[in-house]
Length: 279
Length: 290
Image 1: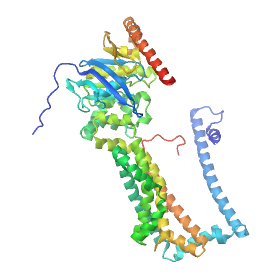
Image 2: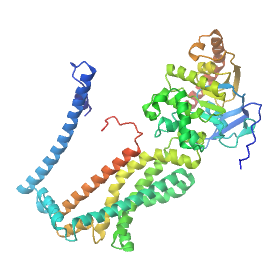
Image 3: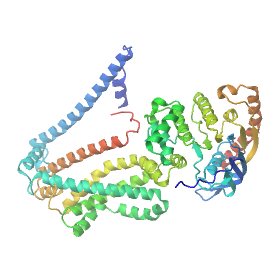
Image 4: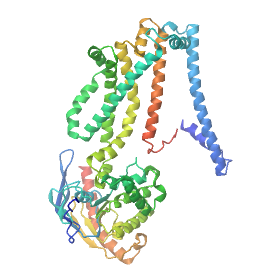
């Protein structure tokens, strides 16, 4: 007997919706802190959305709400039209910190997702080899993470995420720890993988140029508690080469326009931090 | 210390080709190893010779503080003629059996309890007080209870060794589980791992360094447990050898038993290191790279 097919996701409609979401935390000293307030955001299918905002404003919270690792206090988060009930197998997540398993070789790291999901090890290894090849690490299958450079580890992390063929891809400042040359390479790598996979993406970053170079849509958040300050549609042709696109006049115009918005919030966030430090 | 390393590893300035530099570096590191081994042996010889000379010249009273030749003679007598309580190998075997059994049971229990409590905050909050209380009792005292309850045989010594080992391993396993990287756990969760898979593939490997570190220390504790247990009352074992020697003012005998215990501990320590190197071959090689 074949298992009954799950009711398939509606064929149309946005991939991710956050509707009037407020998220509060209780700090260890029992104070309530609001990370997100009245936050509304929509990601269409196959759309690449970047979220920029001042440091510590609550950008990462948006991602945790979509994974289901955090729940909204007010409002609703929907993925493919359905409220979130747990960690969806459709979601892939690339972390800012190194989240690879240091005791596993590159091959076993990349194969982890399929094996967790019940695939036979040999089959998962075949699939993993294919993805390792795609991120250009063919010779490093048997290496351990500590033997790789930061950029190579990020490639492994990308392969580890993409092997699950996520329909929703969440990235939390994934390249912020890399040097600038490696970062540009990784941005192009990610855009290449994304254009093959056609996932819907939320990419959180504090680097405005990175956001404009990659995104279809840029959300600018206010200083904490974060809410949407403005949304910009980036109408630059694809495929893009991130190292070159930043010299296009249109790119520079976007950068100037969005930076005007962002600067106010960065200043406000800075003042808040100074006030908190003085208190 | 670091200046010595720098001196011996830096190639002389006259060498230019990479292969020459490599050869010179290899020579230098071999020379350094030789110096270390020679120094170790030298110190041992100096101490033993000083002790022996002191004992013979009367500066050290060999009646109280024994002498290296006396100790060697005592060990030789035990090996060739056996001890007052039977052949030497039998005493060693009994003590080792108690130690290893206690070590295995205590370590297994410590690891399991550490992981269960480390993964479950509620259980951890409930039991933490009791564990602190139990841990603060001088556990050697329990040896008397065990001898009353379990008799003069092996069981009471194993029980004491278990108690000595359990808390050390438990505390480390617990801490190791708590220190497991949260991003790594979240990553596994999102990749599709169940709670059991997370424990097996993330929590236990990351706690492993802590657990292995505790095993080194706790084997010594297991040995202490077994020997003290034998001290308090036994029919066989190295601990009994010591207490018999003590009873007859035989300082050579006490030291001879100590030497035997030290050798046993060193051998097992080496075995644990072997196991450890197999289990954590993924770790970066430490800088001094032995």
